[in-house]
Image 1 (cartoon, rainbow, N blue to C red):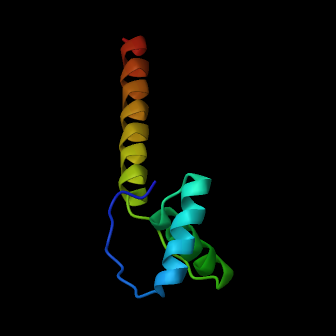
Image 2: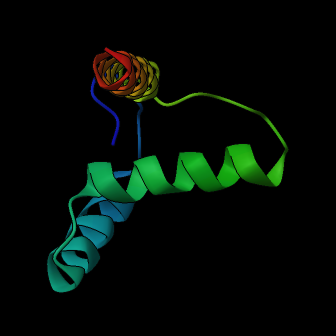
Length: 82
């Protein structure tokens, strides 16, 4: 899940905006959710790599947790030797 956001302002025909809002309401989605999905699909279609915000933080937390569990296991092994 992406954590940080940035604003993207765009101009759209009022009739298209109203139609999008009606469709989104029927589908229980927000226009922002639809636009974010369209952007992800467009990037994938054109092979443009990106790392969603928050992924680096998740990977860092997992790395720290893995190191902690390994060091905890090493400590437990050293206790058994004594």
